[in-house]
Amino acid sequence: MGAELDHLACERLYAAQAAADLLGIHRTTLYLAVRKMKLIPDAYTPGGHARFRRQTLERFKDRLTLDSATGGDGSIARAVARAVSSLSRSPTLQPVCDAVVDAALLACPGFETCVALAHDDHCPAGYDLRVLAEHALPRRLCLEYRFLHDQPGHDFITAQVVRQQTPFFRGDMLSTPETPKSGLLALSDTGYRSCAALPCVWEDLTLGVLLCLGRAPCDLSEPETVALTNLADVLTIALRRERREEAVRRQSATIAELMRRAQAPSADAADADADPLADVRRICQQGARARLVGEWGLSETNVSPPLADLLRAAAANDALQRAEWAEQDGARVALAIPVRPPAQAPSADQASRAAVGAIWRRHDLGAGLELTLLQVYAQACTSLIRR
Image 1 (cartoon, rainbow, N blue to C red):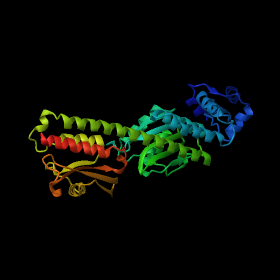
Image 2 (cartoon, rainbow, N blue to C red):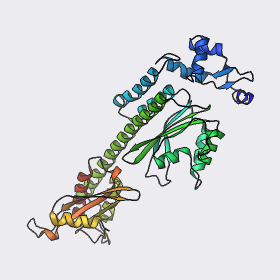
Image 3 (cartoon, rainbow, N blue to C red):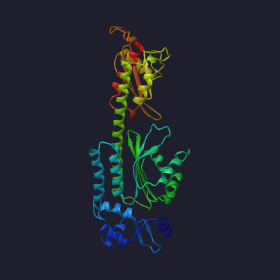
């Protein structure tokens, strides 16, 4: 016990009476809150007396604005309701993430650290996460995460959650041998004993993680577990909304650039390159975040199946074509639209028509501008060929 006090010696620790006075409650009420695990002491004296940090008491004081010091689940419901309402109040991501982190700590007082994380599945590093909002996140833990992230075969808790898409709950990690060793050490080395990590999953894609940590053993009640699950859902909605809006911005900018190329192509666009459409194809692929972009009947581009089959069908049938299939890393969606080559008359044979198309991962499709983007891409392609 003395080691805990030594660890916190640089901070002022409040005894029970001083803590009760700061909170404006009776000392008996404080003891009852501790027994019901609504308030977790930061340390104990060798004689077994609880001691509290100012930060812990201030967070518990915020909880008192929602409910009584020892009262049931009303505070949990109100904390979650605050986070849910932030979705309608705040059109941007950051305020919602802040509200989710605050609500998680109010709903689950056994935790003192909470982090909202975003997972970018396009990051070449794999299961890389970036912090969106946090409370009491120690720098040392960030360094431990970065170290493990760079070591092949070593998993931090969040990597397991992202990969398996299942929540991770541990009331006392030191007594749970099945916890990943490297992740366990990273947390215990920074003084944590309890952990809850919940994935934010949308259409089989992990968008982020809600991570809560405590320095004392903490067994979550059923209402607290449900609250964290609901808060992870709120974070999922906010992350999905942000991705959709970012996709709209990115695709709109790509459409504008393709239109500019179609109306005023650069001088080197008419170069006798082997592939004169390479530049606009690259712009379209990056802006649409497509796995593959190609044309049929406009250039000598070699497009591998199944996009080639879809392009031929679009050109032959003079109609939009769509296909879906599954690959090892997720579902794929392909779109192809017909386009008449510049030298072709409207009455020409259908077999000589052309088409453009692209393949996306399923979760990259949905901004609503994909067809418009392909139409402008077709216009840019035919314009470059004409010149």
